[in-house]
Image (tube, rainbow, N blue to C red):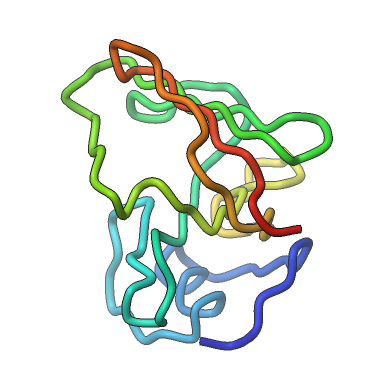
Length: 130
C-alpha cells in the first residue's frame, strides 16, 4: 500500500475506483464500507463512510469539528459487526465538502474505538495517530 497522509483527498469515477486509487488495489466491485487492512500488514479496516450526521442505510457518523473524534450511531443492532477488526479504523470521509460527491474522500487518520454503549448502538472513535 502506498503512503497515505492525513488530509489527502482522492476522487474516483465510482465507489470502487475511489477505493482502488486510495489503497492501490484492483477491485472490480466493492460494496462494503470497510476494507480489511490485514493484507497490508495493519490492524483494522480502511473505513469509507459519510460523516455528515445523516442516516445512510441505518448508520449515522458524526465527525468532531477538530476531526479527532468520530461518533457512529446504528439504528439497528443487526447492522452491528463487533469483531476485533472493527476496533481500529483508517478513516476516510466520503463527500468531505458536503457537495454530493459520493466518489470523493478525505483521509482523516487512524482511529481506535474508545467507547461503546451498553446496547452497542453507539460507538466513539478517537484519533490514534496524528
